[in-house]
Image (cartoon, rainbow, N blue to C red; front, side, top):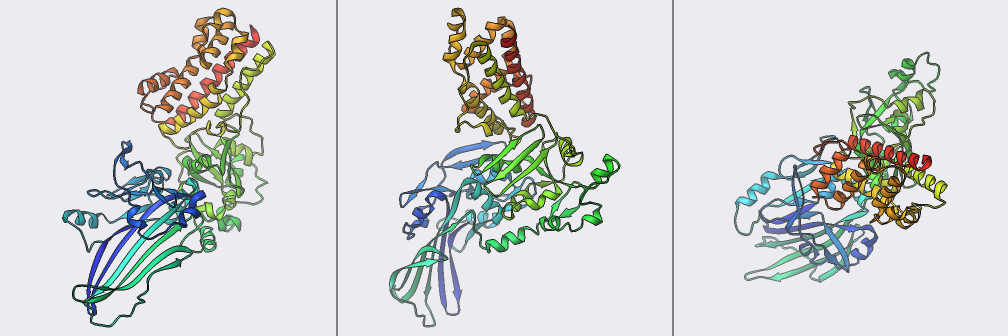
Length: 545
């Protein structure tokens, strides 16, 4: 991913001097063709990103960025690495957070879920280089990253990683005759990407020596790899997954039911005389819940929680699969469905495969083993349905609607439970909830049905809904009902201004949750349940008074 430095080699046929400079930059896929139409000559040094101000920080450390872009052929390129003179190159935070990478040694990152060594950097070489002063030579540095992790991230970000490559070689004090084309600059195409080559003899102080330069753009696309895509996809089907029983199966094994009989798995699975025996016919594969984040955040994916524990996961038009979560927020997939994961998605799911601490979700057992329907509601559906019920009650009572219809741009699909157990992920859900709740309230419609006294108190959407509630109840009862609604509003403010700690504290207290909470997904469940109950109380007040 990154190479920079000079190297001089003393050989029997002369002194070889070579220099490398490879700078990786992120380019949106929509702009990649226009970017590659640019002239690669001398772009690598120009695409170096230098350090600046802190852009993000956490207890795990700081990540820095100069918050700028570089332009090639009118197209913006974003950094993948930041170069520091007295510090090792810093990796873009996006890929670190997407895969939950933890730094273990200078710029060496491991996956928190799998402990895979994802990004590798030579810490000793860097420290040796920093001990030297002046212009450092004879010390090439590089940074490596596992292909699967990189491609998954590029896919989710809808970007290509372009390597702006420069290399030069010359032979001094040669003892042999070397012939090169003395034709100056020529345009090349290397591996399908644009390049320029300089080939000439240079008249030095005491000799005339050959000199070669190569300037090249090489794009790594989400769909590409240094290996054959078909070969890699085929290899992916041989990747083993661990089940809750501790057995190991590849998607290919599952497709061919290889090893099922020896493990006591039966297909078809009928004929059991007890629930315990029926459960022994099945096996399950578990994943940490962040496996879903890719599909939630991408425009090409979706996660639809249709019940408290059940969800449908979709990706482009490639696959749609049913998963369940247990009370420890671990995602379970029926072993048989492992074979349905598309080849190119298998590495993504593999990196999130875990040995669960919790049990098989009850609703999964009900669906697959007992063959019964599940009629529970997801937390997001509870709230969205309660909003609809309030609107229906107002329409029945006043013949008007107080909520604008849901628009295609409304982030309904982001109101769902956070995939990651992080404060920012919870706030993202609350921000989306604000857009489909508070921002859809028609304040003018509420004013029309309020008494004059109440109408004068309306200052915004939240106060309008409060006055409507107080119209049917007394102030004290309305205030108690509104605690969770006020809490959601406070968290929306925190989502807009992440440093608003007082609003965070007050918002969490509204739900009876400690501000120092460390289980943000559990907090989401409490918040959504209480909000749904408050909206149901409002609905009942309108219907009965």
